[in-house]
Image 1 (tube, rainbow, N blue to C red):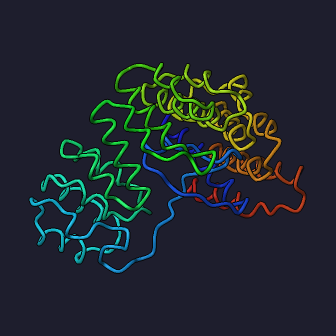
Image 2 (image 1 turned 90 degrees about the vertical axis):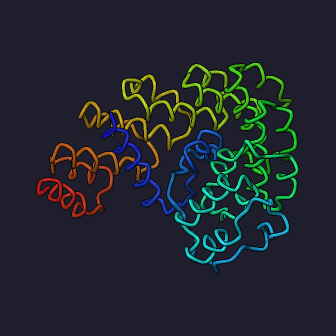
Length: 322
């Protein structure tokens, strides 16, 4: 199961590499809350930020915004002892909790996508005022979502702005988080627009581990494919031809058939991938590697005559040597 999920993920990455696309990685919870763009090919490739000066950015809280319990010496240690990376993020998270000062979470570089965890861990000391003082939008939304969860109050989500892009709805995701905690999916129905309801159901279904909520999402919405993909990655028994045909976007459908080809060790499922062509190539390469069968590399040239099979052969050789 884990190996199959890894192979599915590897194929998605290969599709992106061959297609020349890029994307950002979200935390696990944010992956549920924030689906990809509607081309179905937004993959979880880490976009590591460059090393920045070891001091708060213009969007970070000043020392005047810090709580009285904050140890300034420890804060300075977080700022000066680490680059802007995982270690600094963990330092801020720990200090926010021990100092009972969630405003420290606002110092985490937004590129690392970890402020939601920080605010959630320190939510016992979180107030609406803390969120309002946070000027960085990413942190403010994370702060409000953490507060809404802590208070079990979806009305706090209304303080989150309307989505600027169709594939990310923080307000609706916030509703879904609260709904899951209250075990009340009817909360999603209180949202006024269809896209918001879809995002809420996606979040609710993912957090409750209930795939039936994917069916509540209208078919032409990108949240639906992301919802189905989430559950397919957790349970390989779901992956069948009928299941793969539920996907509307080509990237997700290709990923599903790749998983089915690996699961059944049968190249006929690679043949079902129409587009993108890079996904079909990736399916054959993955299957050839698993089966250590070079003839599958040669099948790529049947639909792409100029394709070099060297890389495919090399992967099989590396697999055999391991």
